[in-house]
Length: 363
Length: 128
Image (cartoon, rainbow over all chains, first blue to last red; front, side, top):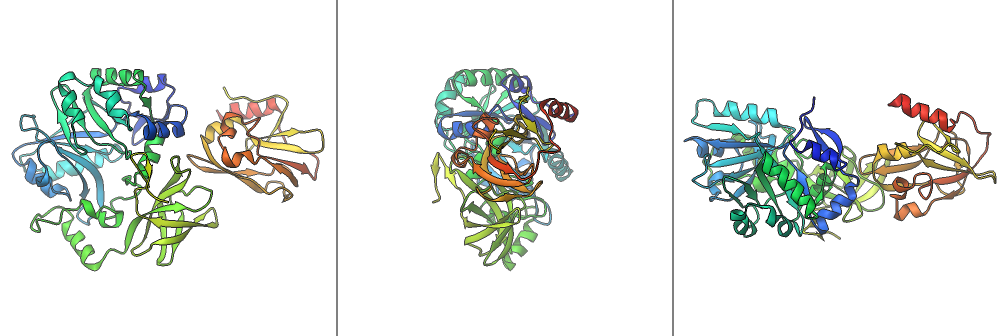
């Protein structure tokens, strides 16, 4: 039996086509995922992301523990700042990618993690094992609803729906910063390449926020649009563009590994150091199809430097062509071919993102 | 409810056929098929004049989710294709039995193995 978020009845009522995702019944779309995609690029959309796992981290050892658990370094965080990081196994493989927020000193726990739904059980087991014997308190926040409002007009349209006391601070947030009160937690973060907020609210307030957002003309958007938006934005999907057998260096995420200070012993560091010294064999690149057709995950990529695979592929509604991410030999660049159902099609490797803030960045 | 026009013939692969009365037959995918596929973003059609073998994959409809082959329901020769789908593949979703037709061909053999509307509806009911 799949789990349902508190918004399940609203999704069904809004015409959502419900599909299983990471153990949850979630809306794929509410009629047209292409239209939902355009709404987010041009106007504003709202996503129910309550299936994602929120874990508050407290205890005297919280900071030291996170500095060991994560490949990025929470010591870099000022209060109100967010950090994207991978959580690695000993071999340097990506157990999950997550966002960690440094909360105000007055907050009951100094850190808040948001991790993926599909890896929830694995993540929690890993974290609990890593916390053994330390003064670390992990609190699962199943009591909260998480909504992402995204798009060029998202903040303007959603601001009146926020608790009044938080409104000015929320509007003044820089990207990857958050503000909170007892009533709400608001981060200027997202998974679309557009401006917007991710808002955490108690259930009743979350339902009211959803209803008011729809009434304000913010379009309900499903997982289908979420996937094409993140792909255009060049953002990885855990389990698809990386997994426990893939290091962040092979997944285009070297920028999220904090090598300094050199004496910070984070899990997976020795394996990553060895890979870095030897030079990674593969890398993640953006790929764009030259003609018509649609690239799909698992298709072969043929480059001058050797063969690779499409890890995420699909149709870009903004660019009106097929784009993807591909794991290819290091050094591969420029013209290549993709084998789609037995036929090789010309394509090009490039550096993601493809689209940011409504603008196409590649030609 | 998916639409199953009674005047059309159907295949078990969820294609429809309409006899045009001039010896040619128009082919498309059914309302059920387009719903299953989701929004189409790309349609690859056979070339006009090309020869089809019965059961041969002769077109591809590709949606936001997946690619799906369209099979030649009978042997024959392609007489026309729906060029509008190149720019507007979504016509297959909005009008599967009308503007979203795929191609027209002249069968080389008499029609065989096709379902009428009632039989196709039964197939859909059986598939649940």
